[in-house]
Image (cartoon, rainbow, N blue to C red; front, side, top):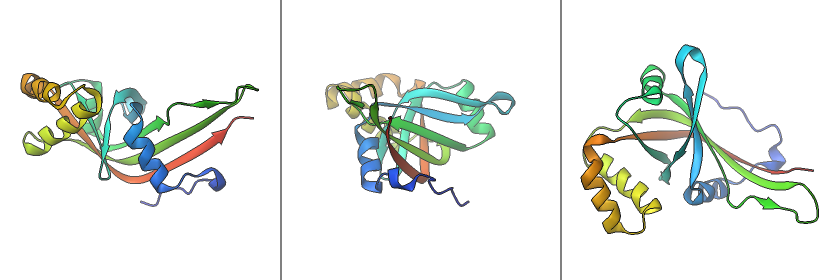
Length: 158
């Protein structure tokens, strides 16, 4: 599939800046095709690594049903902190949107590696991450979004 080019191309971020935002942002919104063809978008913790975005989730639910029905997804996150001009009302916002195919990772070393990346991003130590994985591995799914198209935009509200 050929993805659309950004209409306001002068606001488009470089690929390296998009990847920086994916590495540093803490939360974003995953969107899938939900029940009845309605979009289903949910805020999630995530980690970016080598062209993929990983998420953890429960073993069942709306998101998983949607993914099993249609593997196409998009993900959006904002750079933090959002900058504000102190002398006026407008904001400077950088956002990144990824499109790709999403799947549930099978049990095994890849799932554990993704959980380790996620844990090390959010937990205070590698030991804490390992304890959480040991405790919850059987009760968690890991989703992998293989990025097919990545774009970013800087907006200056004025």
